[in-house]
Amino acid sequence: MPLNMTKIAFRANGVDGLRQRIAAHEAEFRINTRYIPKRHEEMIGGSLYWIVDHSIVGRSEIRAFEKREDGRYDIVLAPELIAVETRPKRAHQGWRYLEEADAPRDLPEGADPGDVLPGRLLNRLTKLGLV
Image (cartoon, rainbow, N blue to C red; front, side, top):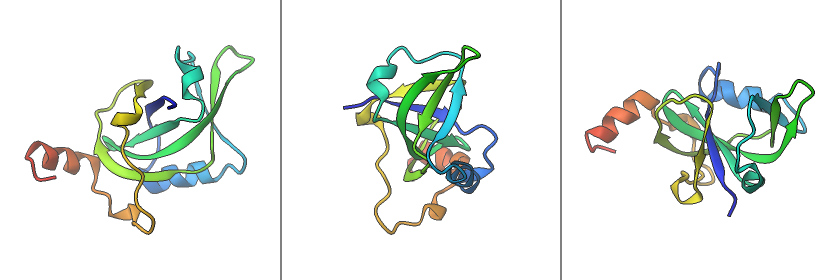
């Protein structure tokens, strides 16, 4: 099974803003990073799980890692945001590995991703044992 990773959706204005940013690219969506993950070969075919407002809200398939001329690396993603069951996730810098067993499931067909609770609210409800 491919390895996944999590990353903050920097400058995304919510899930809709992230979806629009990704959908604006037809063939592929690229983000860049200073360092390539040590386990990058295991991640091809895995997913990058996006964190918005302290919650994992969606994922994009990882297609490749490519070195740029400036020495940085591009993470090449499918230009699609697949909605997942929201899960609280603390903010972090850069990216973190996410094993398949720990990854949230995709939302069922026909589920409305707009019904997702805001991350901070979801975190509080989880701590109280209400979710």
